[in-house]
Image: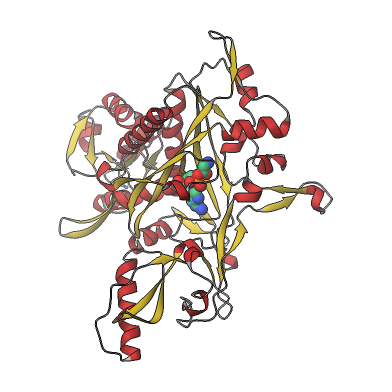
Length: 493
Ligand code: GAP
């Protein structure tokens, strides 16, 4: 993870937001290369799920909706996380990410340990338990520690659990509900009547436009509405770099099906489509797994949710959620707004509220998963090399063009002309500074898949250019026309 962070900063993928003012926790800025990678992820997703399908149309709704949207959707009441304060350190924790256990020796509880959700949580807790035992210098066999999350702590246990910040018990408060929506005011008045929210998901913008799309979009059930856009959550503990931030971007589809349709089959089908899409953009199946939410922990709108998990450097964590939301949202908005958000079935001459399957993924998490998969260190010609093995479709630059030597005008001229030709269709870099090996290395580190060199044979014998493959290091010669076709095929997806 450190190596990825370092590369992101050094090469201009991601910067801490407002860095000159000391940064702002949970916010990030994407630099020149980061914005390209992000745009390519979004473009690939849009192409595959909207342009290349007959049954999904797009939408771009406003970020701030009428505030009643969030009452109807249940977010004002339910979009909360359980918050725990440490009165001494002033640290704040999410109770469901704060785990604790009683330490028992020979059947007797001798104290409590706590640990924050992280990789190797159980191992860390065992270690802390041993430590506690050493401190108390008691004899007897230590029983295995059994972790529970802090939402399950009884009122008697709460004062006994040590704060992760101080290591001492007595300062943690009982969990209380904390609403994660950012509030703002619309217009000049700052009173309660002007309160509005920054959307915490793009999904509601889709539901409240359901009728508009049905009336204008020539859609037929089953069909989907897709949206890509920013979402905001006042996360208690933003962490793991861009994995959990307070401003992020989502790519969501609401896929509407008839209430009589087999929702479980549709849900399963979407999980498979999402897994296949991840593989197609370079996130291997071997790093992905599924986690079905237990019934009692489902979000307020869900009939069933399966998370697609990715093996991040800090542990296996959610990359995407695929939820079956039933008819919850359209029913709520119909009832609260008084506008019928339903579907008229011509064949059966019936009206009904469709059910919905919702694949929802964060752009920033896909970004991180791609970097974590692509980052490699190897050795080329006896030198350590950092290489990002990003697929051409998502790589910031598709190729880099180099004249072999900077001081040969005929090479420079030809390379610049080729660069100008290629950049009409692809994002291509031009570099003439330094030894050719160094120029290749600079591109390897930012994931550019092809290095194109204009040399004397290109100019004197019209022998084409050399194309070096970032991963195999093989070089082949091809004409400039063939190169355009070659790149088209590699980049297209
Ligand atoms: N509309 C459903 C919904 O928003 P979610 O599981 O809360 O469901 C969907 O979020 C996806 O959005 C997650 O799988 C994750 O990829 C991304 N996401 C959620 N919270 C995030 C955060 N704080 N930072 C970055 N990405 C986040």
